[in-house]
Image (cartoon, rainbow, N blue to C red; front, top):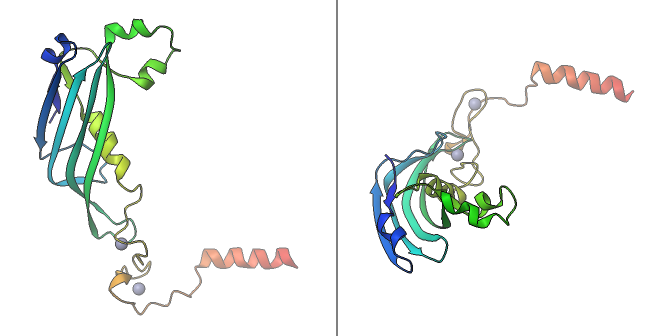
Length: 178
Ligand SMILES: [Zn+2]
Ligand SMILES: [Zn+2]
């Protein structure tokens, strides 16, 4: 689902302000690591400044992912904010004193009366989520041998048994040291 704001009115009236409220139950995180577990609620406002539109707002939801060590599901509440200066594509020339790429870096360029904010929202949500999903900092993960979740207790596997590939390395190291 596209997250779109109708900016036709605000674009035409300098100094005006407009409020938006959006809700969606589906959201594309691009990578598959996260999924919504409750509707994403977005409150935003745009004010028409001198040469650009100023968008700011906040988003609220909760997402789930899988712990990268034990694969258990992890739910993370999300509360984030965003702010962006929006520049009409034809007005980019007003900023010709800026270096190439600098305008795009500073402004979000739009080209019609509909502002698609999915990228802005995704970026602000991902910014508050951990890069690596962990159910807890000291998650013990899964036993590499039997696959038991070690947070639920120790298994009976002997993990001190040396992997044959490692044994060869250890042997090489021994000869090197002689
Ligand atoms: Zn875990
Ligand atoms: Zn085990």
